Length: 246
Ligand code: FPP
Image 1: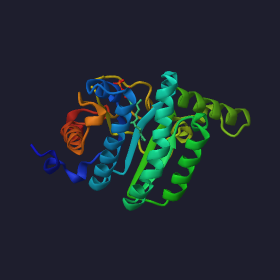
Image 2 (image 1 turned 60 degrees about the vertical axis):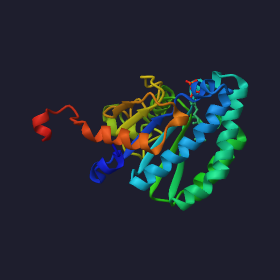
Image 3 (image 1 turned 90 degrees about the vertical axis):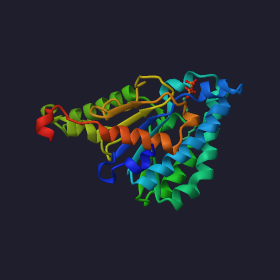
Image 4 (image 1 turned 30 degrees about the vertical axis):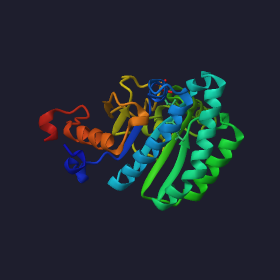
């Protein structure tokens, strides 16, 4: 089945988030070092982003490095950071050619200086691109994001800038890293694991979850089309009844 032909252009998810999992297992299966899996994973990143841009999906957020990933062996952390820098240098042209803007969420100040500098530069250069907004979650943890949000709002309460009874969902949303993005419609996780791993906890409240056994380095545009097709077959009720929706 060619899933691309089956995709309804009018029902595309506005925001796709991806937990790119399985790089290490892919490398192990090939008898390679884990870091080779990450390297191959960058190809899947490129293909996924290009396919989303071509389809017309306006927001894509990738879990590239979690707050917990700092606990991995130093060689692996260094490799991931170097891959980030080299990919940004290499792919700036792809981003410009495809009219894609880059943004990043997470405690970015924890990243190595070089990565921070490169990110800033690419974000600045691509900020007016409008076809797709690509967001990299880097040193990101959803609980950390919520803690930061609560701290920021509390500070405003203390300064009498906001009164506690006026704190509502919109106020919380305005203080998240993702304040200027829509909620996630479709969350994809590769490699067969079925968990959220501290990713976008607030933003996935009504997301459809899609788990595939494909390891991230093997993920191609065909797998993406299948995920979107699967998403479109579901009935999103947002707490209402089926009759109310139809
Ligand atoms: C999870 O696989 C993947 C990561 C922790 C990093 C994801 C990074 C990339 C795909 C490459 C760099 C990305 C950009 C945007 C430049 P894992 O190592 O946990 O795999 P395993 O569960 O099989 O060990």
